[in-house]
Image (cartoon, rainbow, N blue to C red; front, top):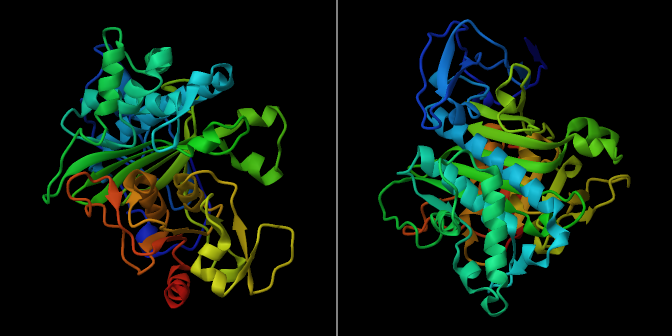
Length: 451
């Protein structure tokens, strides 16, 4: 049932030992009235292992809508936020399906893309994902507020003179209705706009007290999403409790799975072997599996989860470095010590580092480091504040995979620095995301060369 691959890991990434015999229990989740029985999941396998979810003697009864979300690779006894993570994984997977559907028709209608007042690109999928995930989470967790990137103000004010705003809202509503779980009644345009605004800047006001809330980036890498190629983009959702990220999900529909990446296969048939869902829960590790071809498919017996870890590179000049799409190497303090190249085939000495700009959006880089395809992501903060949704879910996915995240002073990201909105973070200098092994060396180099 389990196949394992041995690997040397830091102690904090190891899973606790679990007993194979678990008592039957019932998990009650809000959803449709119709029920079905699902197998109880087995405990996690040894580190860096492949987990095949099989039927066990005990079973749990869940509502059908919630049943889609119960295929997690570790039992609820080990995960206090198991229920929230399960719902988040199901919602993100639906959102990825919405993205794929919208992207197929992206070039057929110019109203699918427009610029907001701050000149940032936004699409039907950005709004649709936020509305969809808001609706899904509100159904099961109505008391937990949502902090998200979009609000409906730009929709209500965009191009009202030529009626394109109504066309845009219609497109968004249609995309949401096609992918949302059963709501019991048809969604209206007002339902969708209100769902978007549940995550808007005026939806919730926090204070200095600790809080529980969701953080959503509906599409990280909208520039990449709007292209016709397979540039990466991510739907990212995290749960924050008392200032700490405790669970998170990233969905990346264009992610090339290992058999494609290793062969560099760009054939038409290989395009069907794309898409990844990454989940993380504090103390339970980071796990991935392929995106399902249809809703709820991952609850079936053949579902496979991979426990994933950061890479083990311990030599600074042999690592792969990710940079932000809009930043150049000479903006990074490491450029005062090392030259850089993007040519993977070029021989390099200890004075030159290999860099990559092929990943669109910050969360794509977090995902790449957590998965082990890159060792480092260095980001310079060009303004005093950064948006929390560009980083929050990435933090737990990298940390639970064995990596480390700090600002350029070596301090952890403070998610509560924005006392009222929880929308901004204020890292000193920038953010350093590494496989952990390289972190202290790189941090010292950055400190020594950052003015």
